[in-house]
Amino acid sequence: MSLFITFEGGEAAGKSTQIRLLRAALERRGLDCIATREPGGSPAAEAMRAVLLDPDLPLAPEAELLLVFAARADHLAATVLPALDRGVIVLCDRFADSTLAYQGFGVQADARTRTLIDELTARLPRQPDLTFVLNVSPGTAAERLRHRGGTTDRYETRDAAFHARVRAGFLAIAAAHPARCVRIDADAPAEAVHDAILSVVSTRTGHKRG
Ligand code: TMP
Image (cartoon, rainbow, N blue to C red; front, side, top):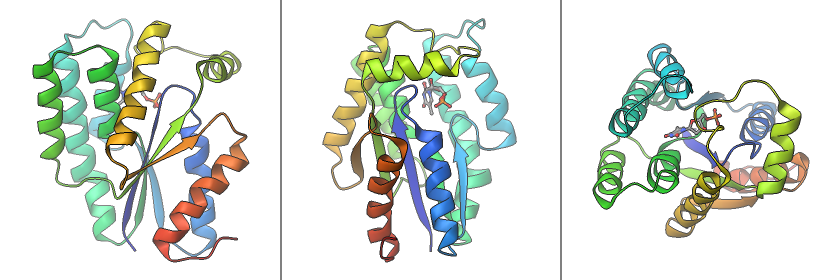
């Protein structure tokens, strides 16, 4: 069965852990799935990701926005659409909601830019069937990032106010699209978050839980 599921949320919301757990659970049921991510998910889009995330490479806001969509166009064409055509379930770490949250809400884009984001999103050849919005409190996110260590990218280095706007943006997006989006409390332990996600996905795939 083909299903396009996206995972959204601020930094350290636990998206990649949840994608790993869901993929394993679906594969145990004999369902074919792939895990992919944005920006990235195809060779060219991964190269664009490196530019987008490089904190030492100044990038004009318009260039940043168009590069996000350029990466998305290639990712859809090279990875997502062919997989969905084969009947595979696609689990995607971030998609167009991240653009509205970061390049719209986060940077406090003007009305013209927000309209452009909406128009470019509406023109995409495919929208997600289901989106999990993982909502994590700033305290939990900061704690997880401290433990994670390592490098910080262009967005992780932004201030707390930026991340608060991104978080509020995701909540607004979830509220505006209740048929597609499921808001999940991502402060909970990973297993509890996984259970919540799996029970929603199970109703879509027609499987019983467990
Ligand atoms: P990740 O760390 O979850 O892999 O995401 C990479 C970063 O890219 C994250 O800080 C959010 C940012 N991003 C945007 O700003 N706009 C977008 O459209 C996407 C997909 C990601």
